Amino acid sequence: MEMLKAFGLGAVLTGSIAVVVGSQGSSGGALDVHAMALGDYKIYWSWPLFLAGSGLAWGLMLLQR
Image 1 (cartoon, helix red, strand yellow):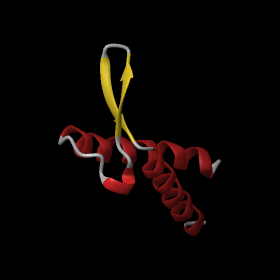
Image 2: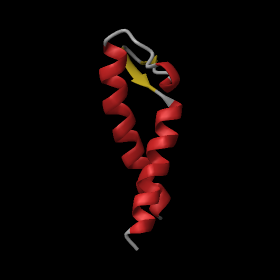
Image 3: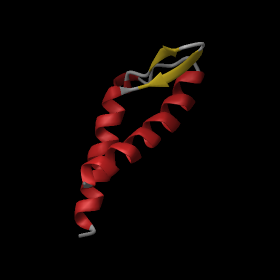
């Protein structure tokens, strides 16, 4: 159950950082921020940042047990 919660927190972290980095025209180096088309909208996303953020959130939840 903690992993599902961590995915949500990882998505929020990724979305907030990717919007800031991607809207400036940068890819963030190792973060690999790229623009994805979602209908008429352009959103920024980074899979490495999502995995790292989800892992960090999952680890923090495990420490709180």
